[in-house]
Structure formats: C-alpha cells, structure tokens
Image (tube, rainbow, N blue to C red; front, side):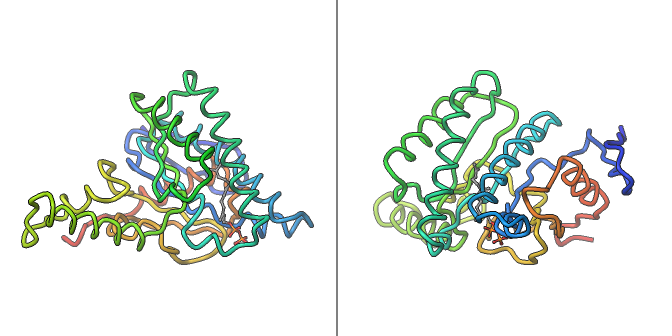
Length: 249
Ligand code: FPP
C-alpha cells in the first residue's frame, strides 16, 4: 500500500505504511537556533520543541509505529546555563503531568532511558508514575532519554555485568550480544531502524551508541520545532528507499 501525504509544492513523500520502520529515534536538535532566528530566548525554542514532540509522538502512534525514542536531555546537557536546564526540566514536568492526565485516552507506553536518580524527587516520581500507569499498554512505546549518554549507559551495563559475575554467578568468559543488550536501558526494545537528526548537525552526540550499530541515518537542515509530520514522512520514505544489508550482501 503506497500512500501520498500532504499538498505542498515539494516532492511528496511516498510512504508504504504497511512497511514502516519498527523503531525511530530522534535527536531533537535546533531549538536554540529556532528561537534565535525569531529573537526569542532559547527557552522559547525548547517550549516549541516540547510542543512539536507532542505532535510527532501522537502522529507516530496514529500511523502505527511500534517504538519512538527521543533524546530530551543528555548527560552533557548539565553544562548549559542553570536557567536553561531548569526550563527544560520544567517542560518535562509539564509534559509528564499532561501525559498522566491523558493516559487512559492516549494509551501510549512510556519508558525512560537514563540515570534518573539525579533529577528532582518530584520529576523522578512523575517518571515512575508515568512508567507504572502505562506499563500494560500495547501499541506504541515512547522512550524519553533523560540524563542519558551512550557511553554512560555502556559503562553502567559493564559494571552491572561485572557485579553479576562476582555476586550472581554470571560467567565472565561467555557473554553474548543479546545478553549484554539486556543490561542496557533499552533492554527488551529492538534497536532503532532509523535515527533522525534535524538542524543540520551530522553527528550522533553520544546517542544510542550500542543500539545504532545498523541504524539508517536521516539528516535534515530543518530545525526540530519545524520538523513536521510531513518531514517525518520524508524521513521514512528515504529509509524505505535504502537497502539494508546488515553486513551481508
Ligand atoms: C537540543 O537543541 C535540544 C535539547 C538539548 C533539549 C530538548 C528538549 C525538549 C525538546 C523539551 C522537553 C522534552 C520533552 C520530551 C517534553 P539545542 O538547544 O542544542 O538547539 P541549538 O543547537 O539550536 O542550540
């Protein structure tokens, strides 16, 4: 089934909705520049970015995507001015409160990847609650990466495995890739098929380092707050045109 979407002058993204990637991951980049071009404070860019996350997450559920993972706050983002960090945390709190109040209607399973222990007790409690209420929902799962870093995730996994070797009887000479994946925040979630980075930056920035091994990448100059449903479909159409060989021929 090939469907067309949108009516803009640009080439229409032609997407086969019966063959969507199972898991899309997005680096929500460009909020600051979006605000700057409008003469607004960076925090206004993050507010627009959070709004766009709602739009895109809802749309992903509508089209039947299984997994959406977004990079909301990295282990390195603490270096930003306190005011900006606090604005992002405020937006997360607002989002989680809304998500909890609409959970029965939306029925999206929500997970968090990252070390939540350094967040405020209130934010930690909201994350726990969101995860707990939504844990039985089936269909779309949204993973929010919060205080997440790919290297940090790998170190934590290595330490957890080392502990299991010392205390839990795990064999230090035998560890499969599947077993190691089970120590990651993303345990049980299939690797992303498609990683999207808007805003013109061409790097991974410590995002899903293990999980991205065979992901297809899609880069665009569009800034995250302007990354529309149509842009998403353009990314999916590009993905569907790729030949994935996973190291084979
Ligand atoms: C990167 O853009 C964006 C972030 C570090 C924060 C992302 C946060 C949100 C979208 C809001 C909260 C999220 C949710 C899930 C409700 P940037 O600031 O680096 O942009 P720039 O490169 O243009 O400066």
